Length: 260
Ligand code: ADP
Ligand code: MG
Image 1 (spheres, rainbow, N blue to C red):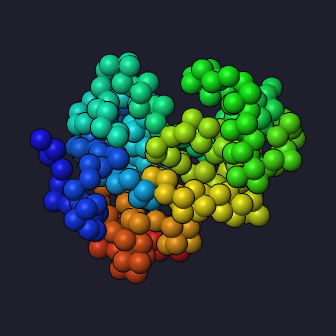
Image 2 (image 1 turned 90 degrees about the horizontal axis):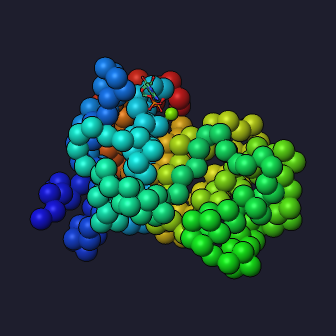
Image 3 (image 1 turned 180 degrees about the vertical axis):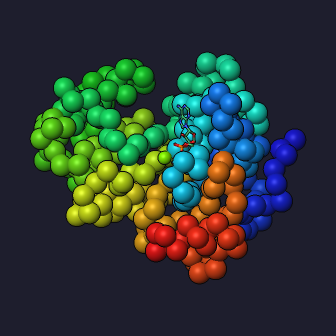
């Protein structure tokens, strides 16, 4: 059976009945002796946007990286679209094909053009013919507003443009879930909006998203739920209006007083 919690986050009966797209149950992670994730449980339904907030060093990156097995866990379970992560490499690969990830540092290949960066996954992982992969890549570059920059190299693009290429690259794998780890933290202020706008559009298109960000405006507007993590624990989970108006937890209040 599905040992899911009592409809956490679910708003309607139909939604509550559908299996979650991402299920994390009592997730623990140690780096050596450091216990950095202390029993995190979270369910994300299809199409939901969950924003993760919390102080630096609280485990947000580590947690989000466990969802595509970039970090192995030592206790608990993670199930993505019905596939349970474990030591089985086939399942890890299967989950990674369904989960796109965008990092703070864009991690584009510097010697490849935007178009080549975006076609890489479909050609090498999905074994698509190059022509088909390029058609999709051009479509995605247009979607993120970069069709005219398809043949430029990362060094010829601004930070905001590079991050939009990184988003297109992740989307080229046609993921069911997108993970974002502080995607605008390395950007100059004037470039933050162009990246958040692409993420807004993606959310509106129905993508299931987990986003670590301190962008309160984005979180208020786009998130279905805010999850607050502190010292490796999920302390609070609430709709944005409630979280920003009256966080239940003292540590969440203190955190908000620092970023608002
Ligand atoms: P956040 O993203 O919330 O800033 P992190 O997930 O990056 O937090 O880090 C959580 C804790 O785990 C921190 O104490 C950090 O120093 C530690 N940590 C993160 N990555 C590693 C690693 N590869 N090896 C050892 N410790 C790590
Ligand atoms: Mg981090």
